[in-house]
Image (tube, rainbow, N blue to C red):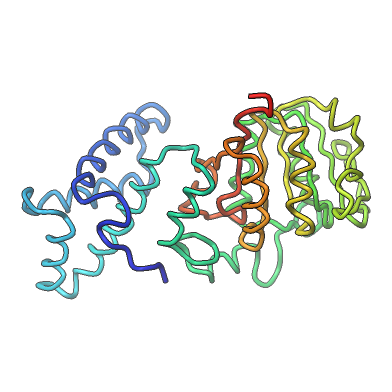
Length: 312
């Protein structure tokens, strides 16, 4: 269940109609420019919902009109109430822009699932990694959920990282998947993956290492961290000593690099500690955290782009 949302919690009542019309104008331009004039399911729903709301008295707030409509027509009212809630939640995110401070994301998260910060039910997130069997890559279990299976390729295609550092190899399937995806994009990249037990697989685009997160300085060789080409994608998926691991890698990350912290619902305090030590250095890229709806990813509020160096 999502937390109750009042008119004052998100975008204001005065701003809601104008924001909806502004987004429709932007959407139509995007559909023409990027989608060959073919609207997505979301595009069609949004226009349909706004068109229905515009039929009400223009002198009244939509919330008031929908409330009265639901009282008069109890069978149809809940559907329209759902449309209005989702529309204003989406517009609130859209108005914030693509790159958002972690603290702002946390504040707005009170309106969503208390653990995952998403409009999806916990059942979706708990099963989308595979229930009861995991997805597989090159025959090995791939510990990624269905949303991230689509989000990562979009991120890799846009970022085109020259280097990927993964903390937490698991079976090794994830690192192999990164290497294969980058090769498919035509990116000459290297993937480095470390775990307490070195992954017992081989891949021409991946180097596997043995390392302990309780000794972050020795996860990867310092010379490697100093010389591997940027941009980087750094993926933290080891769950141990998270703040210290991120602090060590921060010393080598450059502006434009991406940091993705998986399973962040159990790492919130570590993220607050790390980001609090580096204010203004990292922003949440909501293009990817919210690609399929708010935080439809295991990296809830934790797909970061580094925005500046320590010298700035």
